[in-house]
Amino acid sequence: MKPTVTLTEAVQRSLSQNPSLKVFPYRYAALTGQAEIAQLRPAYELSFEAENIAGTGNFSGVDSGELTIALSSVIEMGDKREARQGVVSYSRSVLDAKLQVASLALLGEVTRRYVEVLAAQEQLALAGEASDLAGESLRIVTKRAAAGATPEAEVRRAQAAAEQAKLALLAQQQRFIYMKVALAALWGSTTPDFDKVEGNLFEFGEDVAFDSLFAKVEKNPVIEIFAAESRLKDAELRLAQTQSRADIRWSLGVRQMQETDDTALVAGFSMPLFSGQRNSGAVTTALAEKNQVFAQREVMLLDLHTQLFRAFHNRKQAIVTVKALGSTIIPALEQALTETQAAYQRGRYGYLDYVSARQELLNARNTQIEAAAAALTFGAEIEQLTAESLASGRGQNNDQQTESSLR
Image (cartoon, rainbow, N blue to C red; front, side, top):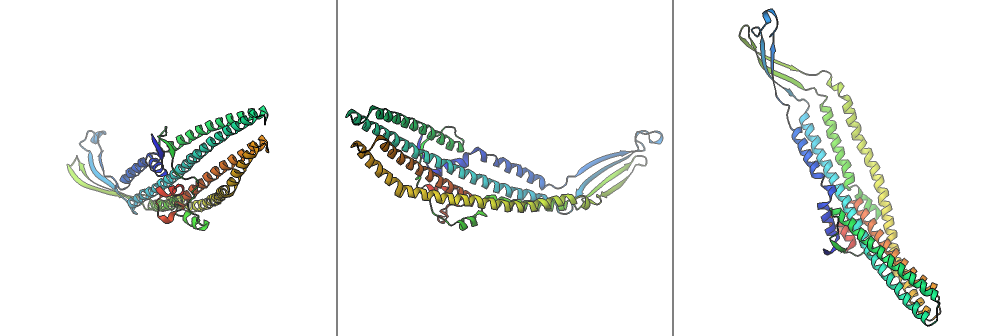
């Protein structure tokens, strides 16, 4: 088992082994088959026809028969073959964009679960500190009770608090194990092969203005899907328009007259009438579907703007919370706990004052961990929405982008 795993390793393993991405090679194979079909020209047909045979009178038997062997096919009008190939080609572009979206979504999920494991590590360490503090409190209370300075009831309360801290530590250990299992599942593993993850929970990367971030949203593969689908709908519209051009069916053959033992060439052609009118509905449908893509793109941009706005401001608030806790609140609570413990040992404060000071410090540290995890999670969401790292100035690619926040 590896002692640690990095975010880069987690991303690489997930992108190469995640089951949700394994369907795409089959989709590409299906498009390859469609491309082979689309480039085929109309097939040739060989036909045999017999007339005036097996009748009555002069037409009994085959002596008066007329036998025809003919070769026939279709001449496609309106560049139908090129239009079919265009549809398949642009379908591949749509699939490329969908693969990028799926990969980016997976990248975001890997980062979120990685942050959850990183936060669980910090909370596990904090639970260990809480258990140690509870044990230290029990020692102090027991010593004071032995000196007759505090009632036995406080010893019982301290014992209960120490046992509850142990239970909380055990629960946090189980949560940490679950978070590791959830992360490993992204690369198709049911059992984590690492002990912990690397990273700094309290490093958040660079701040970027909201307008600059939203300007990058249009490069998101989600929006690129609409561009690819628009091109696909154009190709489908062209294909529908080519169907308005009637194809010409031709045939050429030889006819044998049994009665005179003569032969003659036979030729013919046919084409449907009013095919343009009959196909107008398909053209109207294709045009409507093309225009629908533009409307859907505008809706998606509005939705992405809302998501980005929420993630941007929540990240900013979380960072402010982490910094305030680390620079002012937690140092003050640490000092208060030290002074309260000393005063309690001298008999100036009661047990409740001592326990409250200890719990306030633990709560503040836990809040700082949760806020830091939220800041990194919202940062990962911003990177997923913009398809670019918050540290894009260093030119990282998509597979490496999200690691910048945790280094």
